[in-house]
Length: 78
Image (cartoon, rainbow, N blue to C red):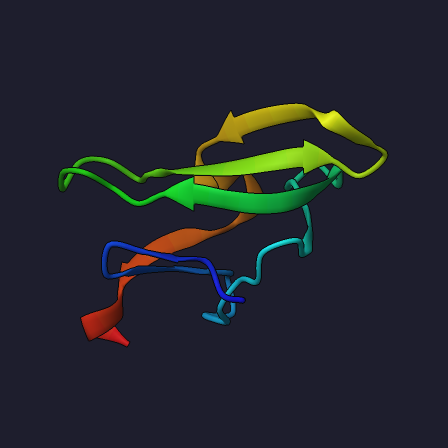
């Protein structure tokens, strides 16, 4: 299932839709599993993404999408 919220879709640097539970890596190569996120709430915001460690279901974090070369795009712009 694609990560979609309030008319926004999460895309990678190749403009491909991100799927929940997908393995993603930071720009430094650190591996995480994406769980979801929050799209931007104002023009100057980039939103957030929620991730967890691959081997630890309890360790959750929230990052800016740019940490993973991701971006939120309004669905109407696709």
